[in-house]
Amino acid sequence: MVNSLKFDPLTNAVTSKVFYELILGKTTPKGIADALGVRSPTIIEHLWRLQRIGIVTRGEKIGKYQHYVINWKVFSNIFMERAPTSVGTSIKLSYRYFINNKPLQALLQEWLTVLIRDYLKPANYRAQWPTTVAFIIESFEQYLVQCFPSFKELESKDPETQQLLSELEEWFNAAKDMKHPIQASLTVAFQKVLRST
Image 1 (cartoon, rainbow, N blue to C red):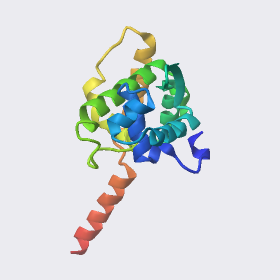
Image 2 (image 1 turned 45 degrees about the horizontal axis):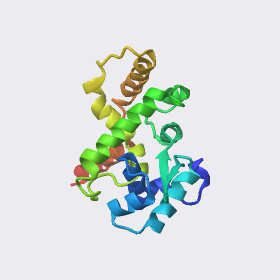
Image 3 (image 1 turned 180 degrees about the vertical axis):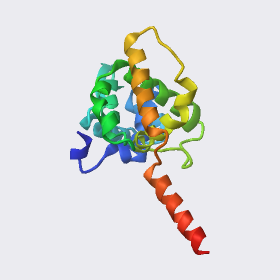
């Protein structure tokens, strides 16, 4: 869906900030524009871009204000399509499990809400934090490897959520010993430079 577009809105910092404000509860172009300090027509353009890929839809119109909502089902599917894996086909085989998975949608919604509310927004979206949705998606496996040990012992009474934990644990186990290509290439470069000096 996203790949067919010439312009990928998830790689754009402003479009990402518009999406983040939707996550934080700003649902009108005016509310988002006020939060970001820009004009409403700019916000409408970015909302249109998010609508084109299906992760945002028009909600209810109340008075003169058009509201917009996030389609978490579409977003989680795009997220899983784009989340790179260093483990190759083993996780791609279970990818079908993640499609339309309600606990995954809830996990992504809560994770992004906390990330934006507690980390990105207070930092005023500064460069040292991931600024685009695409960057967050591309970094998911790295975050999973770092964080999963702290919650892999959690249990849920909901069978679907427990299955999600099992699938994420399988992904974690396959990825934990893998080096990210950037990390692996940097290690090789350092070794080569250190040997030659």
